[in-house]
Amino acid sequence: MRELEEKMRFFLIANLAALLLLPVARAQEAMPGAISDAYESTLSALQSAKSPADIHRMMEAMDSPDWVSVAPTGEKTSRDDAENQLKGLLSIPPGQRPIPIQKTIFVSDQGSRVLVLYWVYRVTDQGKIGSIVRDSWLKTSDGWRRTMHEKLIPDRLLSLP
Image 1: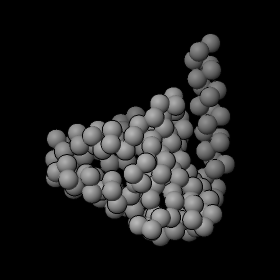
Image 2: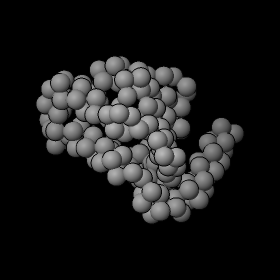
Image 3: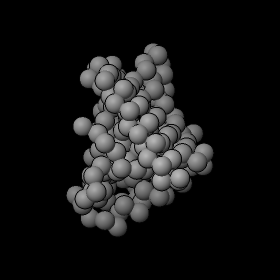
Image 4: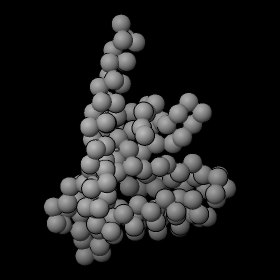
């Protein structure tokens, strides 16, 4: 019974994903360039960081001081805790770190606030493993800063184009 429930849940998510992926091209055009640049810079910095100071600068450039991450279970992680977790990547040589792939699904631009919904995943031998994430952005005097990162579903095998 549990296996059937899991299959049905995955089927519903896959169908929802297919519907949500329709506006991808338009969504990417609507995202403010500074936010798109922040995602690209952060993924690049994750790959090249050599010190805890590099990780701190990366987080400082993207996330607000009160940034919070919310797991699918509702568990919250502060920016300081996330920064400490990311420092673990420094033990992996630059260029060999597992950096996720992002595919934008939807962008809601409300002037000084932007909501970005995207797939985030990694490619494995089993296929694409990942989740749907929602990021909230706020335009501040320092530029665009991410205020919240919400992982909506646990990592799972995805059926993405």
